[in-house]
Image (spheres, rainbow, N blue to C red):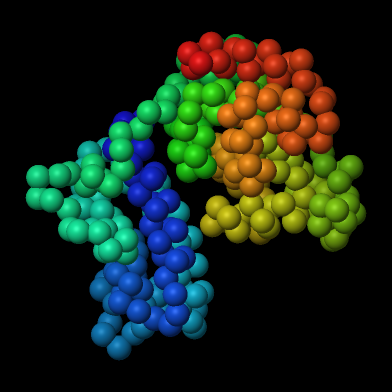
Length: 295
């Protein structure tokens, strides 16, 4: 994962926030976001008689259109790879315009003056295998780039935060080998506290992801945050990209960076587990993660 890849993750995250901060009815800022979504999606320019978003999404107002645009941007974030392209310039320009910043200097490449160079440790498959030698080498190779993107997205940017995050994930996912819990999910049937109110919900919404998201309610909330319909497509959560992003979402919503900053493995474990099950193993994994990340 290169510095450019890091900046692209940060740029799309910034774009999403700026889009949702647009207030009121349709405005020139909506014109800008509509144009960017169309360009990145390789769609024709918006007809002059159409309001923003209406030719792309089935929406009737600005607020719904902005939400749909953010969902589309989250999908488009995974389409930019390799060297700088014209699209990177458009994204940089859009961020500057929405942020009311000066135009990019002619001698600066996109993103360079918007975001600092990252200080986080970009995790490799070898790092994951150092933390959990029992992990599948193929799975470690699959997960590493998605874990880096998730840590960037959810501000898990210091080596200490990363160490706690990866140690807990290694424990919860059987050394990164299980993106879906081994049990059938029958035990979750008719669990009102999980939102499982229809026949088959227990199996349908069993634990998936590196920190296993469980239950219809949690699938709905996680999917809404990540811009993916997980209620209709629950198995999507067991694919490597969302297995990592959902873990980042869970970590962020429980404000676990705060406990990681205090190097408090007991508090992190209690919040994730509801108790202290596996604390000794989690502590050993944390030591291995600190060694891998040179904390």
